[in-house]
Structure formats: C-alpha cells, structure tokens
Length: 195
Image (tube, rainbow, N blue to C red; front, side):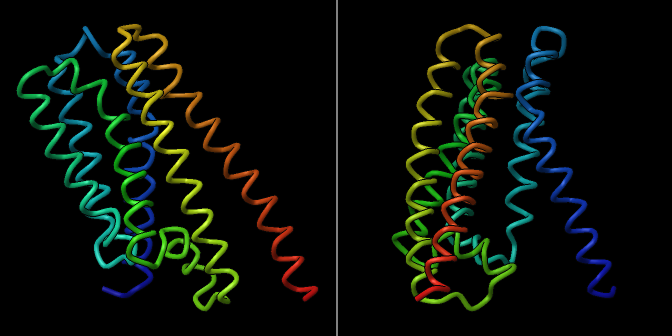
C-alpha cells in the first residue's frame, strides 16, 4: 500500500474518531434514557481505543498513551459499577488524560506542543522549544481546570448543564485558548525575527 493511501486512511480515521469524541456529549444528551447506558459507554470506549490506535508511531504516544490506557481502565471499572455515571465520566476522563499527557511531556520532553508542531516545523529553534514548553504548561493547567468543571457538571446531576458545558462551552473555551495562543505565537515569532 502506498504512503499517500495510508496517510489518507489515517486522516479519515482521525476525523471520524475526533468527530465522535466531539459529538459524544450530544449523543449522550439525546440518547440517555432512550438507549441502554452501556451502549453509550461502549461508544466512549471505542472512541478512546480509536484515539489510542491513532497514536501508534507518533511522538505524542509516549505522553498520551499511558493516560488513554488509564481512561480505558477507569471507564471500564466505572461502567461495571454504574453505567450511567460512566456515560457522564468520559469527558472528565479525557480532559484528565490530556492534562496528564501534557504534564508528562513536560517531565519527559519533547513537550506535546513540540510533537504537534513537528508536523510543520521539524527543527524549531531553542527559543521556539522553550515557548512550546510554556504553551504545553498552559494547556496542562487549562485541561486540569476543565477536568474539574467537567467533573462538577457530571456530579451535579443536571444533564442539560453537563451537555451544555461538555458539548459546547468547553470547546468554545478551547477555541479561545487556541486563538489567544495563535496571537501570542505570532508576536513571539515577529520578535524573534527582529533579533
């Protein structure tokens, strides 16, 4: 199989898995009580396994794979005891996994932001690496806070609030952080060019 076909399949799989993860809170909101909770847990487990499989041979795997395995184990154990709670726990666990992944990458470089940036910038300067470590730390803190808020919505018992936060507001906040970081990065790059 040629490499462009493999790349296309990988890209398609990444879109499917990513889309399923993004839409999961809405699927729970519309389906909980209409379909067995275990079906939704199975969907969450499938998305987590898909994310884990997509990491193969990626430099991000060293930081993210252990955290995703922890998600799979925790979600499976929780589903054994309380499937309804497990359906609401998936976004909490994924935020925690990503926070752990960013944190691990700071302890054992390269940072996750460096791993992601390597797709377009394979040889960053030392200043760029330092900046990427700072951005990784910011994402680690953000995702830790997001985990706490997500957990509060899951424990609060209000499915509307849980779906609104986990299916909409948390993505708006992530998008805002991406945008602010993009603005800061442009400024940092301009300053680096001047020096």
